[in-house]
Image: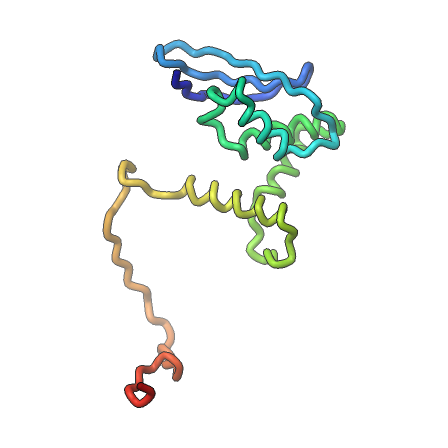
Length: 163
């Protein structure tokens, strides 16, 4: 059976993830409740999201939900368990999911680098133009203005003497 996710949210007391979906019978919305077990304020949100997404019991329902979205829900739950307000948790998520162009990725550990890459992939997919989009243009040619004189590079010049 194919399920189409419409909304996904979290309830803090008791901690559960709620998904509103549409089944094969179009027009009727259904609700699937997934209890969050063994999660504390010290738990890893990305690992909890992976465990939930690939749980055989919930896997069919969560096919259309990204790992990043599930990770954000677990981050909200973790913030609640730490005593943070929703605004503080939103600010924390905003800081973690924003790419800083001044940041040196060579200085990040593997886990942080993987987070940055997944954020960039998600941003790329969101901004990607597809053939089905109404403003899609197949072949775009852009003339860039030449403000300064182009400088010739010696290594780029072709010379037949070297061969």
